[in-house]
Image (cartoon, rainbow over the protein chains, first blue to last red):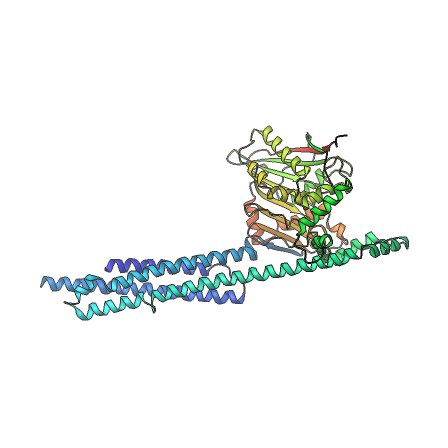
Length: 73
Length: 453
């Protein structure tokens, strides 16, 4: 499960990059600037979600290690 | 230098295409994020995690809650919804812009139809007034020429020609209007090619003939092929060798040479103008194809799918665009580029697969004859030059001259415009000159023969 969560975290990180690339296209008007800001905000939130997924993956690994230690003792 | 570049890769149309693509990517990403959110929710309920709750209840419960949080509405699930909404917002913005543009174009068209209809109802008094002015020694033609230079927008009214034919608010379009006028003229033997056939024969190129290495050269070639009034039409086919041993083909088509409304031996005439504007078959276009085919046959490259650039000034540009819009011609020849100077081609449906470079002078009446702006899209670039401050060109007629267009093309060649730079890169095969071998310049005489007695 830890590796799945880590893999999905990586995937979300890539998706954040994709969203950032979308924000990099030419936007002309003031309204379009607002959209660009929203796109960047979404990319930042995805990057935060990717970080959170990696933290949870580490949590899952620690839990698995604790369980293994418990089983051995 | 008064140069304005619209369309192309730096244009509004291309920006809207980019936004549409961006909206598509955002919607696609929303779907992907939604799938990851589902996986996180599944992980929160994973049997291993639930089993671990027996040994480590605090840690496993906390992890389960955190995974559910990450996949839920406050986490990735919510992000997926927000990304989908953002994609819909971008799509709506693009659609709103396109709708507003269409509404404005519709209003302009309707105003043109009404204005031309009202003017056409005044045809008799206007004619009487013009005759009276001429008799009083007023230079009406010269005055009109100068007036159109200072108020070029007046020519945009020509875009409402269907209004004169069928009244204001007519469902007919511009091509219908021109077509109806052409058919009316044909009844009196005017602007019709009935009974004529086209003949194409090779002639020696002029001594100054050379392969074009710039857009200015393409426009400048008009000086070589434009014959005197009454002479036959002449067009140029240039074979440009490529690095891989293949060839690229440049065809240069001349402007109108004969202004008689009755068809004669020279197909570069008013009859061809009217037929092309009505999007009807014209012998000049057939002659261009015959000349290109003959040149390719001579070079042993017929049917080898070489790229073709069609260039022309005034009527030559209309013929170039009309051929590029002809699906049958495109099946036989791989037209990739059109260069038109001083040509009204906005309404000709050139497909997006063909890259168009239109060069126009704001004070030139001819490119405005359709009363419509050129498309603003990635594959259609318009270079407009304002001649208001030009010390030489002071009339609409002078603004149409091919020599002045050559100078404008040279300004474009040295312009730093991003769209123009992109266009130059895309058309490099045609402007390679002798880089990969000696180009071959072939000139052809195109004439009508007949009509049958």
